[in-house]
Length: 298
Length: 297
Image (cartoon, each protein chain N blue to C red):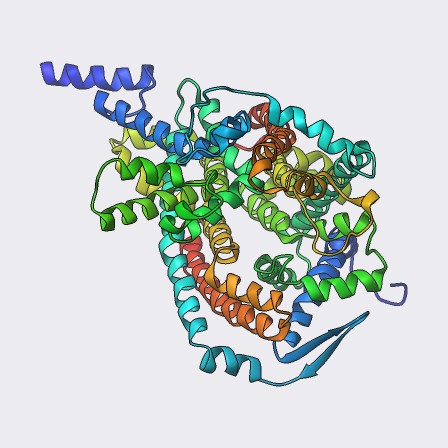
């Protein structure tokens, strides 16, 4: 009797209280694992932030200390404006180029990927399997591998040394279509689209009002990836004018200067991380909403 | 269009839908398909670059013959590159599956933990990752003595040195630690994808399984895994591509080295031969998964 009662209690408690694992040791192990691996993935970030506050003499200490700065200084950050002053072109132009290229590239990439994935996943057009094979093939080829043939195409199109040389090649990047198509295959039920069709919605309307809210998590993830890639994009030999360069191109030359500038380089890389992180937190905020509101479950 | 007989509103609409793929399709044709075909042609040619144009001389299989028969290093690199795939992909896969499942539990500070794991993804293409890739790439002792001492993994080797371990174990531990970093850093996207997949599994299934008396272990094998098969396919392909094309992959390095020496023909052959083999691996993976998809999906 007692055993049955205990079993009942156990079932009851499992229904009532959220438990991570079955035992106290399990709970400990669970959090320990999460913490350990989490620590592993943050250490590089922490290290670069810590290093950016080190004065020059501490930078030269070997072996370098990971977390401890004896005399933290803002020197590395304060030197950046004076380094920027020495540029030929005002800093604001680089910043504008970066923001323009990143925003336009990201928006166009996400829109093109989502609409292409929608058709590849949900319509019955011919050759769509062949198209999808091509997508997977082109995943393997990165910008560096295709540098020469692409250069010829750019020069044929006359987009060398324009801002389009950043944006246009980024739009059809296959990763977006690949992610989107797989996501739509799995998580956008065909019934939803049929219902829209019966109610008289056309392609554009179905895409905009049905598909978009459904794939919002994937959309946000894609936006984030695209933003990250565009933000740190350094084109291979297609941009020559100083007025068309972006922040990553300029800043890497500004802070290059051997060991003496390594503190400033770290400070720069910490500052350059900020925009993608901001985008991440914004997207996480709206991700929570979309998860609960869109009809994804079930 | 006018001359063709329109079969019905459906086919008209499907043609209209084709327009949706156009922006992307044109882009892919111009920026991917054409260059890919070009680079395939280059791999059978010898290239010389003159101001304003590129001269392409068809040399047949000479480049492939060179890398396969006259360059013993290539076979070694190829072996190492493929070995990387078979070691790293399963490791990343299992690691991200475990972490994804753990992070999908409800507990306090879950968002903070998730952010922790996702941070590397956000900043991965930045300076920091390159430093780590460089550091974890070569022999650690070499890095420790090299000039660029202030960055990278040396912290850990110095900590380990303090433990007075035999040098062979020390070396192994350092390499393992280096790789653990790299592997965790490469698992970020996969973890996100897996969490997204896990959240689409209806709670109902787990409740039923619980009522029927299934253990957590059984629930994992009979609910989580079959429901996740689509996501897992995505994650596997994604990981494969990532591991295959990362800059530090020996074959990629060799190809880039040839590019650097302006030997584009040989460089393209190096990469193409490798990509064809990887393509076969991917096809095999797709085939295996399609069996499971038929069974479960």
